[in-house]
Length: 272
Ligand SMILES: *[C@@H]1O[C@H](CO)[C@@H](O)[C@H](O)[C@H]1NC(C)=O
Ligand SMILES: *[C@@H]1O[C@H](CO)[C@@H](O)[C@H](O)[C@H]1NC(C)=O
Ligand SMILES: *[C@@H]1O[C@H](CO)[C@@H](O)[C@H](O)[C@H]1NC(C)=O
Ligand SMILES: *[C@@H]1O[C@H](CO)[C@@H](O)[C@H](O)[C@H]1NC(C)=O
Image 1: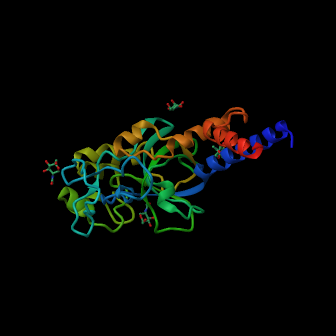
Image 2: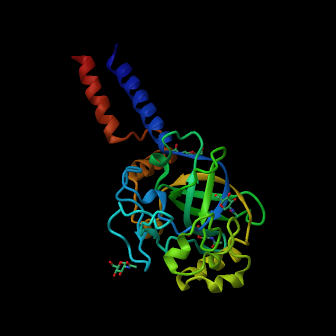
Image 3: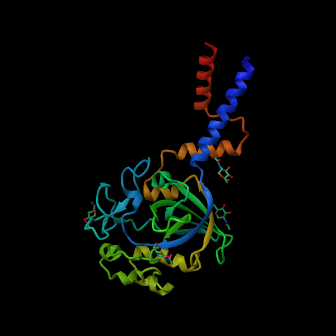
């Protein structure tokens, strides 16, 4: 075996490992969307759900962050942790909005460990939203449909599902947040929501055009800090994912220092 042969072999091995590694973190496909705002403690707010800086921030009934991620959800169980009001959607411009979602991805058996706190670009593929995109951070999980990729968009007044969390968090009738499965019926009903949720309730009738179950093409993207600033949650694989994006975009000769080092060690072992 000549040295150059070996070097080529190791280079290919290195490249293979880099590609496999970034594909592990990559996720793309078609998805359905729903909407929800149940006020409950988001699923990615528990410790140990994934490898991240810390879980998604939760808030108490007066919207102050709760430092203790063991605090139970305010939904049904007598806990006191709720969704922080600032984890809502907002428009960046006419074609781009930011927000949060409860998600489910097919073909990822490690579920929340794979998606909690990762970010996705959603390119809408159905009218009236075709041509618009959202970037969302997965702060929650949508396990109740597991036959399709799904992003349930967190939109105040968008759909309380069947929980009593909003009534408990804000001391109002649950109906203020609209009907189970459909949310508030008109933009005027947004006036009844707590002050800090009204604008994002109106976003649904304005930027989002009150779309029902719009479909999307999704792909994982590096999280914008505007999103992670509001959850405090950054995945530990975020940097590796970002590096993978860069090396996928640039010439294939860019190999990561880690694997180059590994290759060098292997080369020494073989030569000895
Ligand atoms: C509201 O949430 C429920 C439960 O996830 C879902 O079945 C329903 O389709 C949602 N409604 C809308 C309008 O997204
Ligand atoms: C929420 O937390 C803040 C800060 O710790 C505290 O001052 C406030 O009383 C808490 N609200 C409730 C309803 O417990
Ligand atoms: C919206 O903002 C994004 C991100 O800054 C930018 O790439 C895009 O061109 C903007 N679109 C319009 C219509 O201004
Ligand atoms: C992720 O998948 C998309 C679509 O297949 C592709 O364009 C992109 O290069 C992939 N990124 C990585 C790091 O493999």
